[in-house]
Every structure is written in structure tokens, then in C-alpha cells.
Amino acid sequence: MTRYVEFLKSVKLPEPSDILRFPETRQFGRYRSIFPHELWYFPAKMNTYLARYLVLRYSKPDEKVLDPFAGAFTIPIIAGLEGRIGIGVEIVPDFCMYAGVAKDRARKTLGFKDTLIYLGDSRQLSTIIKEHIPVDVIITSPPYEGQVDDKRDLERDAARLRVMGYDPKEYIRLTQAKWHYGERSSRNLGWITGRNYRKGMRKVMSEMWKVLKDDGLAVIVIKNSIRGGELYRNDLLMAYLMKLSKFEIVDHILFEIPSTSIWRHIWEKRGLFSVDLKYEHILVFKKKSG
Picture (cartoon, helix red, strand yellow):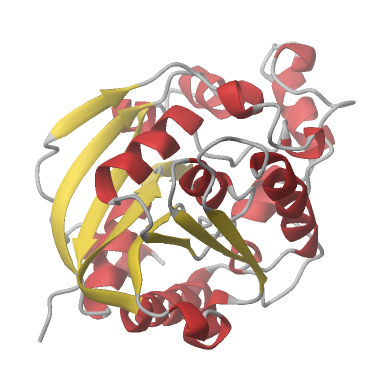
């Protein structure tokens, strides 16, 4: 792993062209009545101001907006609400079920176009959504390496906070957090680490290339993290894997995270905090024709 991390340091991103700032949107903000309450405390959902901004900036009405790691289906539902055709692919059945509830509610909203919900593994993306190829734009926030194992055990998180001198009730809604990532499975990239994770992500990105229109854009929202006491550059890893899949990076934007996570408090206490952790990285890639 050390040699691999050192190699990533050779990957260069464009200087950020902008820094976005939006208010926090716990429980989906203005879309709270659309998304079922079972998803309100799911920790990995995208800020809904950011989601709407990305949909409006990178797509036009009636276009197909794909999220191959749909999760809570924030992007596909908001795309539908904004007059686009949102397409979401998700490997965890419960998320697809909750997305169906959100879609039924969104249908009652003026201007809603459509949201298509697919249960499946995005390593077979071109097969799953073959009826809708090509899509006009891809907007997604992929699972981080080992993400599930880090966030699944709320009791463990609470114990860590107590050791650090914090009250867990201030940071974790232990009795209300009903989210989960599904059963441990090698099919779920959120459960995988190391070479298998990178191989799986590379496969998804190759499938993204197949389904995206020529000169189309793929937008990846990613956040860096602390691993082994050091800053781990998930942004560089995504840029590297996308380059291997023949995408060209054309823009790099920062989103300043409006809330402070429990991990930031822990990292600050341990002297591990990096200013980079205040941001999510929005990496914009282009599929060049020919």
C-alpha cells in the first residue's frame, strides 16, 4: 500500500477553478418530504444544494443523468424533479426500495420528468441500462475504499468519542440512525479494500465510458480521508483510475463542507487534521470523441 500511495503523489489535478459553499442539508433539506425517513440519517448522502447545482450546471432539461452509485438516489430524484431523466443503479436492495417511495412522492411535484431505478452491480452497467445508452452526463459520488466497515458500527463510533472526551449524543443519533449498507459482500465495492477495490472501480469506470455519449461529462464528487495516520488522497485515486479508463480531466472544483463530522473532531484532537478535509473535490472528466 505504501508504494501505491507514493505513486498517487505523482498524479496531478488542475488547480481548483472555484470553491462552492452551500448550507448544510440534514435530512435532505428542502427535499425532506420527498425522501423516506429511513434515509434521513444515512451518513453518505450528498448535500442537496450541491446535487441540484451539479444537475443544473451539467445537464439540460430532458437529458439523461446517470448515477452508477446511486445510494440514497439523491442525484436521480433531484434530476427528475428538475425536468431530467434521472437514472440510478444501486447494489443494495433497500436503497432501491426507498428510491421507489421517493419517486412516487416526486411524481406529484410539478415539472417532474422521471427517475429510473435499477438494482444491480455497476460493473455490468452497460448491460443494466442498455435501453438508455447513451446517457448525457454522469454525476456520482463513489464509495470510498473500505467505507462501509468504517461507518457501519455506531456503537464503536460512540466508544471512540467517549475516549476522546466527547458526548456521543452530540454527534451520533444512535436510536434514530436506521441506515445500513446491506450485508457484507464482495459484490459491494464499499466493503472492498486494496487491489480488489481498485480493480472493481476501474471496471465501473470502463462501463461509464461505454454508456456515456461522445464528448459527455462524468462528474465525480469525492472526499479525502485519514488512513494509517496520514491523509489518503481518494481524489488522486479517482483521477488515476479515470485516466486509465480513457477519460480526460477538464475541471476541478472544491465544495466547502458546511458541517463538522465526528471524525474531524477526532483527527483534530490527535493532531492529524489537514485543511484538505474541509472540502469535497468535484472532478469533472470528459469522454473525448474518437
